[in-house]
Image (tube, rainbow, N blue to C red):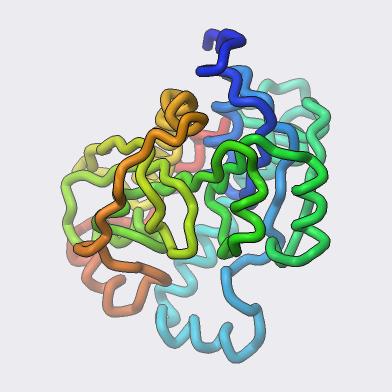
Length: 281
C-alpha cells in the first residue's frame, strides 16, 4: 500500500486509539499502520464485558444466552484470542505475519500502551490529557466514554461502528443483522456524544452480505471496511463535517439471546468456521 502524503487531509496529527485486543482491532489498527497513520498512544480495555464482571452478571449472561450459545460464543472468543496471539509465535520462526498483535505494534512503533479497566477514572483521564491528542478514536472499545474523556481531544472524538447506526446501535451487530435476514450491513464513523452510537455521522458505507457468510466472516469484512472508511474520512473528521444521526428508527442491541440464536440457526448460517480466522495469517 502507498503511504499517505503529509498534508492535513492525510496527517491528522496526534491520535489516541481506544480499543481492546481482538480480531476487529487488529484488522483496523494494522491497516492504519500500513498506511502511515501515526498513532501516538493506544488505550486498551482490560474488561471482557462492558459491565461489572461479578458472579451475578456472569450467571445472568448465561441465562440470557443459553448454554448452547454461551459455549459457542466462548469457543469463538477463544479461537479469536488464539488468532490474535499466534502471530507472535510465528515471528520466532521467521515467518512473516499479515497482522501484528497489539503488543508487537506497540513495540515495533514505540507506541505507549495504556491499559485500563475504567476509561473514566482520573488516572486514565490524566494520562490521555498528558498526550494532548488532536483526535481520539474509539474502535471496538467496550466501555462508555463520559464527557470528560471525549472532550479531551482538540479536534474531534469519533467512534468506528461496524453497522449503520440508523438501524443498529450497541453490540454484536454482525450477529443481529443475520438474525434479521438483512442482505446488507455497513460501517459508520460518527462523533461521540452522551448517547450510545447517537453522535453526528461523519461517513458511512454499506457492505453486502453473501449467502455463505458466517457471522465471523461478516464481522471481519466490516472491520476491513471500517479501516478503509476511516482512512478516506480523515479530512471530514478533522473539520467536523458531519450530519444528524437520525436514530429514531434504530434499535439498541446487546448480547445475543438464546431465542435469537435459534432464529439464527434457522437461516442455515454458522457463527464461524475455523477458516474465518485465517485472515490474520
